[in-house]
Length: 219
Image (cartoon, rainbow, N blue to C red; front, side, top):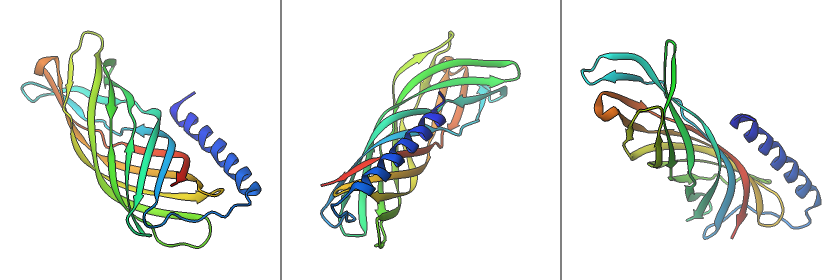
């Protein structure tokens, strides 16, 4: 099963559960307000969009490009409401990605790494009627690479750093403090990949889409 298929299947299962809970609910739901915490448990796909070239130490094109795999993992989102319409969210989770060098007849794995990509956004949440609470946000993300494993005789070093993020999503009221959450983030992040001690290098724009679905609880 591919990461996209898994995410879609999870979304359908959560949506079905949401419909059942809504139909059976006798307890009123309300949107989060100033002073509330909202904790979301999500299934998240992190899908890098890189296709940057690999260059020699002299700056010449090698004819190869970087490909970074997607991954699906559970994540947590913690949102605090400063006002009824302004909130701050931090997400926590880790994903694993394979890095490949591709070009012509070459398609070889060079490195596998875990990434801790915390994202902090400030959200605007307009007041809406009904059970849907949409939001948009903007903020910063970090990329911390750890537990890296070199592949096929290559050595790869990746630089940690900071990037920018935009966000859009919605909480859909279920029962009492419970809600369904759908969330999409676009992250812009650049890292320098040093291969074989600098024999090869790549200025990599990972720029992943971060797509999530899950269940939240208001506190």
